[in-house]
Image (tube, rainbow, N blue to C red; front, side, top):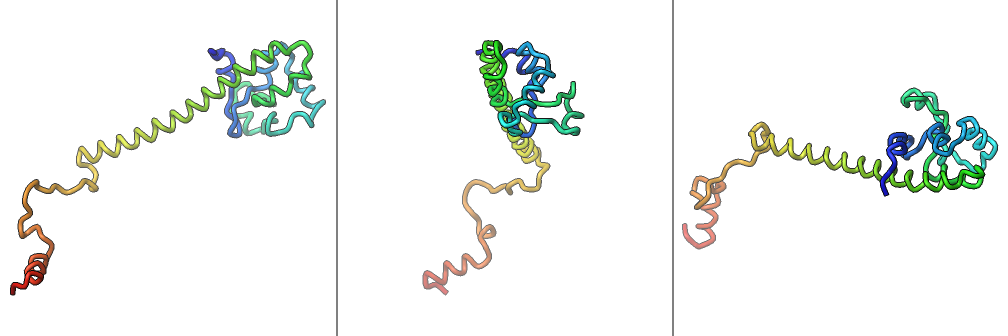
Length: 164
């Protein structure tokens, strides 16, 4: 299912959840945003703060068009019995909302993975270019000379064989 661009472009990431602003949800359902707010105020027990966010002044300053509320996917689903005649629009909206949320989550995870890989590549590039002091010392391939042996190793070997 292709996510409608209007849903994906309107989703916000607020309080560790994907949410749609009240005006965008009202627009999708063909309602006035004030009517949507009145529904939420009339049934506060049905819309817990975890599912329908009443945005703080700080959050509203950071978001364009300054919504008053934002609905998570579950919060939008709770409107099903309260908005008569809008069930078809809501049933079209919820799957698109879910897929858009999955896309946002996948994009965030992918971004973290890309950042981690970039950091590893930068560290490897510094090692290859010799900029980092942590580069392993070069060891010649072949036999180890007596000068390369740790101090006293050769003497211990002789003592173990019974030689003076």
